[in-house]
Image 1 (cartoon, helix red, strand yellow):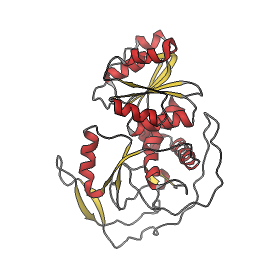
Image 2 (tube, helix red, strand yellow):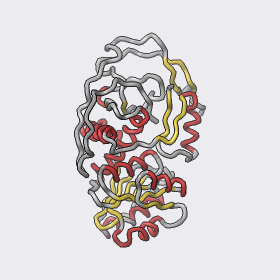
Image 3 (cartoon, rainbow, N blue to C red):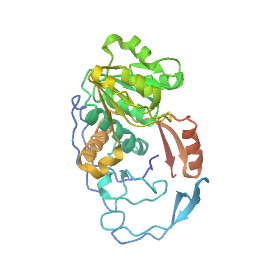
Image 4 (cartoon, rainbow, N blue to C red):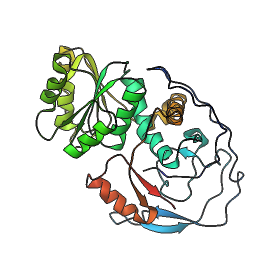
Length: 317
């Protein structure tokens, strides 16, 4: 879950048309004022959700701020693995982005992880081209809806959304998918075949794993690509490599966090483009539910019980 923060507004920009399909536009973030100088600490404490004891609910505590080091400072939207569920957090400046003027705080909170993952999976790994058909599993989740949004509205691809209930399939269709499949009601492969026939799908983005992954793999067309993003279903499938040979298909993985260490310029460029697409009205991040910080444990229960759709956020107000 991402943290919402208040930021200075960007200078006014004229509205630009959405970029051509398949192209990525670099955005240079505008300079922002520092909230305090390096080495200077803020007197007041801030609230944070803290793990005080393993296997126990998180506790809301008052935490003393630490001094800002020279490579830290500005409050922006960003990516951080720990200490983000709080009124204040500090991270390295290379993993933060300025929020454009026309992008709301809630929209911005969805972008770094969900849309960063979607863009890297679709553009960088699967190399989606305009007119291709993409199958996405766990389609009503935060990343699944981001994949639908990017694939349809930026890359001009067609999307088959696969989800675990009729309600989630309906949401995926409302968010831009051309077709939907409830994979709890039968074979995903057969359902996809009925929709697109022998043409199959050019690429699949899978976040479920297990049998759903195997069915998605078997749904690929000649020289199709499947990208593994996770195992929400709890099972990790064994890859039958003979299927890779039969149709010259490719199977690959994608973990967003690794790009922070191995290719930060690429990550920065793609997330900057996501912010610009959102600023231009090409992308429409979906927030499923917002919890107060004091409700952080309820938020985790909501997600673990598979009740969530879209992004779940914590609000500090």
